[in-house]
Length: 431
Image (cartoon, rainbow, N blue to C red; front, side, top):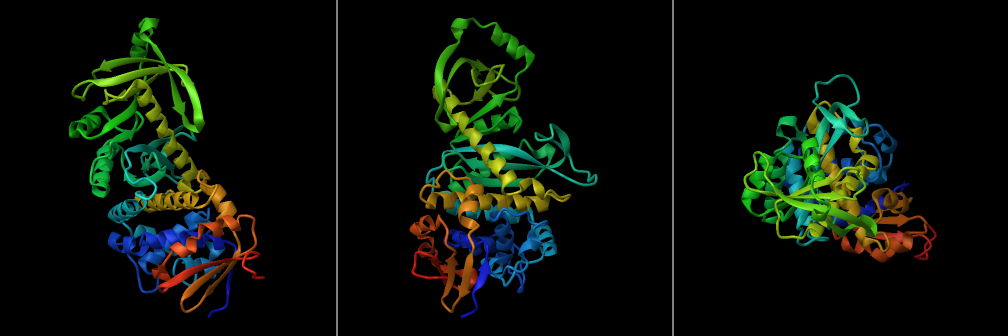
């Protein structure tokens, strides 16, 4: 038995059960990630994922944990690799590695909270580049209110479970519209069928791509049409009697009284008609124009469904604020692509943990990290077990009740050892 390893983030081992259950080492192997005898591929990915899970930026804060042996043990190493390794390793990966990893991860994790996912929200996020001129394309960054050199990333979220389930940071402007069908093919590869519903905004794709999606005949979509002066004038000419009233549910159990007008419209590059629902009362001065290829659902159902798209905006906000998605921009998109994929994995880890802990189902990553993950303790390695002992803390009973260690099984990157949790003040232990 080795001497206990002291750490201030013993709660990080709460993620081991999920990673072991999903066969993280197998996913990494199948994805073809590079590795070496000193730092196997699984350990390389776990070391980078660990820094996502503990609210630390990979480059600027990695040195804070150079001597935390418990954190190194989490990744199957003695200590974490240096910052130069983290940077160099990301450049050794290619897009196919990330795509295979995401496919394996989502196919195993998503069925747990959502056995039959039927709706996905799609969105772009521009990761701004900080530094000298790089030749990167300019993309609009809302926080700056202007287009600046940035990397365009694409994300998808399962609406019901709120799991991020896809990312791509290799998107160029001329290929951005094609991400819609690219994600549909990704869904088919992991779910065996096209998604039933897709929600996205007006800037995500083109009418031509929507037409290709509609011709597949298996997916309904809801999007927003850009408001032109000519369109607004035509709406203003409609008689008041043509507008109807309804109440829609929005997130946080709020209800909005809205007025809407339904029309069937024709647009360039789209064969057939589109259903347009002009809505007022959503907090905007001008009507919101909702478009869909579904003519069967009621207007209220269409409008309520589209409010689910707000979930991906919340998830991307958490990804920027907690997972530091905007802090790792690089001149080479592949670097950001690995980081975006790790953001999807970290989001899944926290969504899983929130569901396992009583009273934390709606908790965001920052709260979970502060209450659970940032718990000090010691880690002991024996021939058969990894013993994690948590310091006395108010939330330990909740973690103990979840019994996560009993669900872990053997940890492959820890020599096949089992995981055991103990808690100060609850086990008769004075540690």
